[in-house]
Length: 131
Image (cartoon, rainbow, N blue to C red):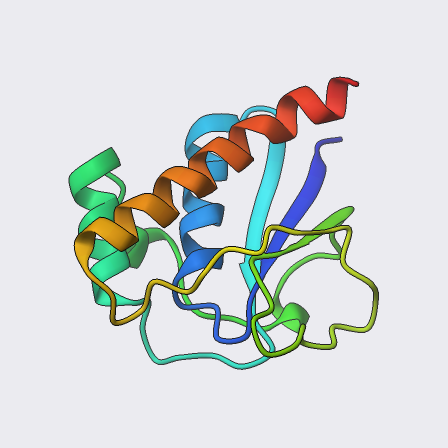
């Protein structure tokens, strides 16, 4: 059975959605990836959607939606995308905090930088699991 990895941020509309999409894209054969928040938004961040299509050909609006922890299976590994103000309480401690800045409202260059950081961290999950 594949390990379940969940990416968490407050609104589940940007960084955690990007991480879920990139996890499935790069390591979907190895793990099951999910994202969730303590609150939801009516749609995924449009800049994130646009740039993920541009950079990877991935349509997050077609395959993902904003959801809370209750809507996903119990994860084996829980990763916070970054808690600038304070980590949301999810009923357990986080296994890791990636400390990534929220690119919402920022330039495409800032978005691309955060997306690339997420890609690098996602790809590292495989090598960390083998250690």
